[in-house]
Image 1 (cartoon, rainbow, N blue to C red):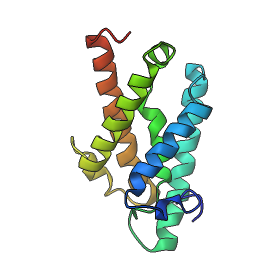
Image 2 (cartoon, rainbow, N blue to C red):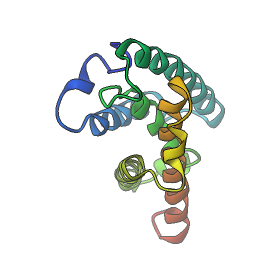
Image 3 (cartoon, helix red, strand yellow):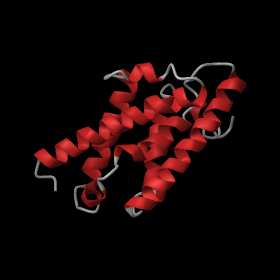
Image 4 (cartoon, rainbow, N blue to C red):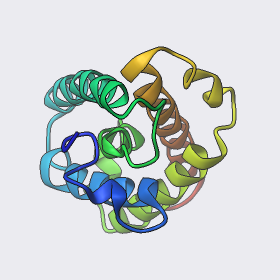
Length: 153
């Protein structure tokens, strides 16, 4: 329970998903920001797997499907937003990309376009985490397009 709610942070305030995403930015900055690509992917895969297990158990214990106070899924999905953007994050506009990534992720996580909402129907922790990973992938695609089409890099 503590892990899935990030030690109760999911119970604080009126926007638990946003709090989980802010925790994800801290998680990304501390643990992913300077990793080489293979280590980045390895750590990402491990944390996503653990989140599926932990969130699945959290759903069982709370007797709810994807409860809003369960915010581990948002936290572990934030690094997905910045896949393949290490070269941009090493530049002087890193803060723009990070803020834009955060905003796009929240938009996609809340609106769940492109069929993202259907992923929540997966059983257990897979459904809890899959929609956030999809929101992160949509964010990554948008960020790559923005970087390619603007003089940000």
